[in-house]
Amino acid sequence: MRKLMMTGTAALVLGCASMAMGADMPKDFWTTPAIQGYGKIHYLPDAAYKPRADQTYRIVFALTKGAKQPGEVSPALDRVARTVNLYVASGVPLMQLKFVAVAYGDATSIVLDDEQYRAKFGMANPNLPLIEALRKAGVDVSVCAQAVAEHDYQYDWVDKRVTLALSGLTTVTTLEHDGYVLMPL
Image (cartoon, rainbow, N blue to C red; front, side, top):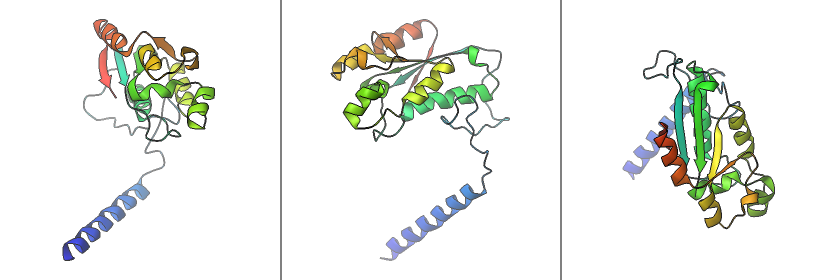
């Protein structure tokens, strides 16, 4: 019983400490400099391993996990936005970011248009505004055609802003062959 009380007390102290730290954070602690409202970052100007503003970066993001709940934005897709925000905050222009995000596996449904997402989950697709923002920033959001078929979706159910790729496998390997770095999410 005493061990249980000590554990409970420690959890209460840690919980209060983290709430207090959050209360002390300035309102602009988290920012979204390029993809507004998504991929929040806390930029550290003196941090190590920052991207260089004079370089071009090629990354292919393998999105394999969907959100826990249908009404949530895919955490993997939000990480793509965070990456864009981090590079832009470091001074890298959007035109020097060659990013491709390919959804497959459990992430396949994030690319369904609103009508089909609503038919499957009973609500509008919460990922489409983020996909639109990523596209405007130059990120190619794509989906594996093999995964679309495996999930018994029709190809015309894929939102028009999403590129239909032959497969996730060929997208990743083709882009790696062309000098892209793989970022599994």
